[in-house]
Length: 506
Ligand code: GLU
Image 1 (cartoon, rainbow, N blue to C red):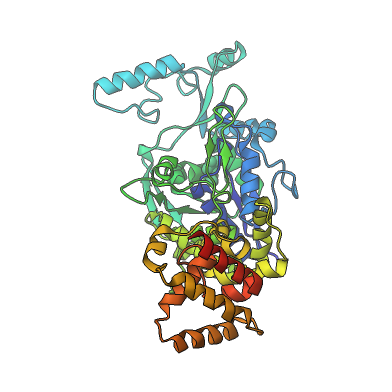
Image 2: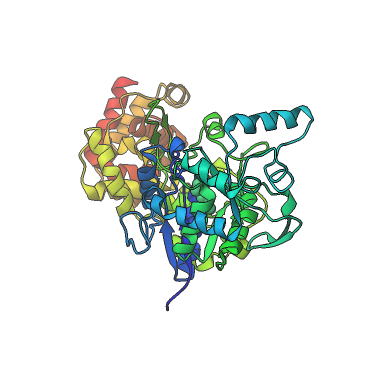
């Protein structure tokens, strides 16, 4: 089925993509897929002063890791391309001219110093300076609404710096519809005349964004709440051009785990969690920021967590694979109020996803970690190990700590456990146990358990007297999975070797 749904994620490459940005991309992706539409990546790099060279690649890599690929974008199905605004520079002036012609925009020649003086003057009077209807034609501001056409042309030709400003209407009430927030009413008298174009030939964000959304046939603009204040201007721009406006949806902020305000990198640094999907190296300072990928998170767990930051399915279900999110996602269920970020919940999702991964997949992730430690083991053995420990792991990086005794003979023994459980009579008991173990033919977990337990019962001593020292001998501490599973896995020879080692070394 053909769909007219076309949405875009339009980041400015000013640094790494914050998780708020990833969530915007995710909601756009889910919305597009749900409606069999197109998800577009557009790089909004008109503000060259804030441009960061490695940020664009970072954004592309991040979307790739999150498994939310764009259908159209830089170097991909460039049907409406280019998708980088700096490569579309030549395109925007024409549109600024259309607005000038229609009377929806005007030239302004006020210098930065003049504007600064106005601002300061207002401040002294306890007021805020806004460039708009109430002062633009009073003669104190220098623009084409007050200058003669000749003078305007003369200034432009002689190379005077200018900007083109939007002429916000006066005494009107705008009625805006937001897919999440409903109807919003705005008094146009409160709007300022935003700059659309500068004499250096570059459009501002506002003009480029609207022109591109129109040319790229965007049907829905789904973006962060920080763009809500731009909504009236954007809506007016569609009216001014006489274009059909896309639908708008402004997503709630992602809030700090504690206190008020937007989640920042500083919160992550303070409380010990990343706010970026991938680690990022600042090109200038060399500072490295942590990323979820490098911290060991599965991308599907990360995405599931993000999906719930501002949206819920209206049921108790929390675990959703990407395809399920696509099915369930609905802008109507996105909340208006901010979503508090919870680092513990992120871990919880990771833990849940760990249990859904196959032993095969986890083994493939564990093998290189073992190889790095110089441990070579049969894949089938490693797979068994993984299956016995994954329940207690959150990250693949936890595996070795939970399973080292499956691969290496312990050389140290937890002193507290030794003190409590390794008694005077223990070495003798362990010697006898070695004999019992040596005689076991069927070395399966259930059979060794049966025989050893029978032997303990026959001696009429508590199970702990044997089981705790045995665990200490095999694991080095009183931890780990079912003891007889360990015995069966490491085998008879190694079991005996470890008990004898313990007798010698404790
Ligand atoms: N370039 C803007 C940003 O950095 C895009 C805002 C929008 O989606 O309209 O978020």
